Length: 268
Length: 279
Image 1: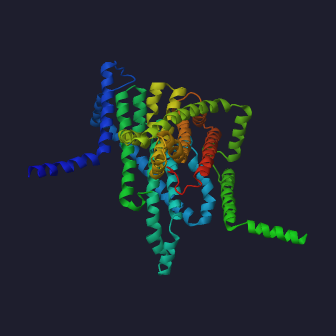
Image 2: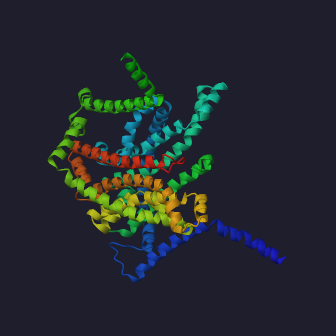
Image 3: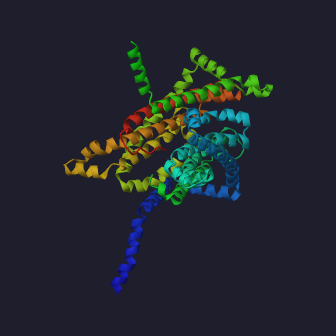
């Protein structure tokens, strides 16, 4: 009896460790990294102008949160980020679908768009800042410029990957044009657009930072460069780590959503 | 004679397969669109009445190319371009030197991979630009902060694709080679490395794009010298021609370099049914 109980107790626990071994190893390594970082400066004297420790960063983070500066800067940056991405979806997805659906439009626009997509468009930033100013408009346009191309190309490849057979089947069974769009095109293109969103978000983050490094008076990018200018390394690190966490949450969140919503694509 | 001519004709029409016709059509349409955009852009100031203020921000292709031509003719471009190229080359070389061994290590060891996965994920998801103010603080605004940004940008595509390529190696092939008495070195030489190579080349293409991006942003914000600096200075004095000329130069460099790697990539992956991971 007792033996059985022991076995029952033990088995799930062993399998829990096994199942989460990778995640635990990762968490342990990160913890170790911060511990070593903290410990080094117990031995080596700390020059607070150039270096900092995790405990100081944590204190700086609490400071920024309590004063409300961090939330304010994040909110300021989130607006152009969201607006630019929204505009990129509104323009990029229909354009991409058109390029994929009408073969000749695809032929005509593909080279032009490829040139734009492959060139470092960030180089346009100084010009866009002059055109549209250093405020919300300028940042939104930079975000749009960088984020629109992943949507265009992914929507186009999504349409090109549509199964012709399915279209013929819907046609033979008396489906209308609307049915083709709603029942075949849309479900087939959606996973590609979500995958495009993952790439676009990365580029949009770069765009917001570029816009705010250039010339801004608020925003998370501005905060990072200002804390750098005044040698406030602890608060600078707090902001950098915040951006890192946001970037990971956004991209991994979309990856998770992709797996959950389109499991048939998860293997690809 | 007539027969021969006829024969040639038949040969030609047989040669123009539907696939080739599509290819010609796509090339012609693509080139026509680009030409059309350039022409409309060139004519825009003549069609649209523009105010003096707007004219200040506007440039046309002919002026941009004249500016480019002048930059090369007078040789003023070589100095800034060389500065950027140096940072690009050193940073990319360091990224290759670090990324390949690390990718192989993480690809071979599941434990190491699990340990370092959070770091790789976090740094890959974060725009490297966010570290620029920090790197400028640590390394100054000279060559080395640029090299560091290029390095961080290029490292992760190389590392992740190498890792993916190593892990993708066919277990069956490894077992076969092992059964015939291969050593670990043989397995690497015969199966793992040839399998990983196309992945690594894709990584290299992505890395080049990121590296050029790194040079651009580093020169925008933390440099005294380089094409990016020239562009920012030109922008702040409303010299729009120079800004566009710089953009064209960066775009051409980026397209040429990634295009060359793409050629290698297509040759290598021609025979494989499953393409290497792209983004």
